[in-house]
Image (cartoon, rainbow, N blue to C red):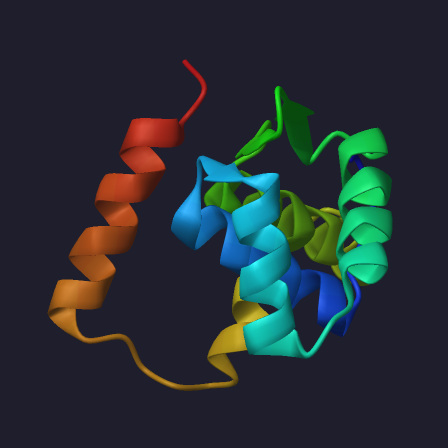
Length: 120
């Protein structure tokens, strides 16, 4: 999974699984047919690919995740900061803020986050 970026259709597919897991593979086929207009073979092909990438497992015809949605998007965010800003969180925040001012509440939330994640 590390470094793998989902395609648009894979995002929709993974969201269906994350919202409905654990889900029987037969039920997943029906859901994908309804929501994405996919044939059974397409569902199983994409499922196998994402199982091989470490996203899901299909044990005894029950599909469940090996990585949560939050974990995936956290990894993508870190990758973006690494690729775009050389891993510099301050550079990212400077660009993200674009000269805007923080409210007192936002500043306090950021201070709290920094304190919770600061190396000692």
